Length: 313
Image (cartoon, rainbow, N blue to C red):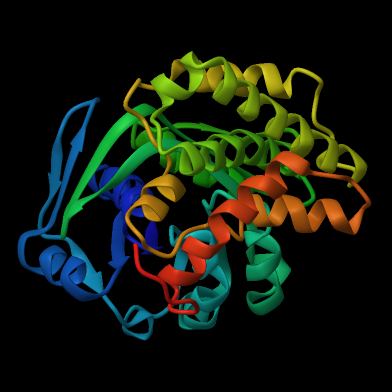
């Protein structure tokens, strides 16, 4: 299968690498030092499931060089999706499907608005991975998993075929009965974990051990659950307990990408995670005091990282 990976960091690099290793025609769309490293030395992946290399690795910063592809995996950060959609156009043919794997709940709609709803799937992934250095990805936690489906939940031939491609690459994959609910389940977990982690600057082991931070995570999750319910998303009552079980299963040293970005004074997914909870809750009249507190506490740091506010640290 001819696949373009748009955004080749921890998520795109890992899943794209596995797909390339399985014999698919994968091109990584990257930039800067990461692109140069991929072109010169290929992709190096360290994984708890076994290290591997993709060499040579096809890589470019110009999607127009590829022509149309069968699948575009969108692996950029959630705040970069809208901009990415403007560049993905040359990759889209009549049968192309676009698979977003962001942490938020709005990527599919953003992509559909610019690329056409008929091309876009709903998708999510579960993995702890990050860029160690240019061309070098580390998978550090969770059994890597992807889930995707048509936005209307039909099990189409193209979705079934894509599932088979991921499975053949050794990646746990599912087609949920309700992709919107599955995306919100992931959102409930990652947003609460990321937000409390960024405020406390503590890893998973500490946050779940301390009663105060553990309670904050759970309260943030219940707020997200209520926003989803009022918006018509069919989350089960077990969603929070399952999300807390995921927190308990993380390696003790685990942190989220949003937390790492904020602690590293880099632009983060704050607006797409905690900010989205506040905004989407406000739209339907649901109060979100814990998520609002997290967002308000982190906003100054986020604006500074984006060059919109100046102060010494």
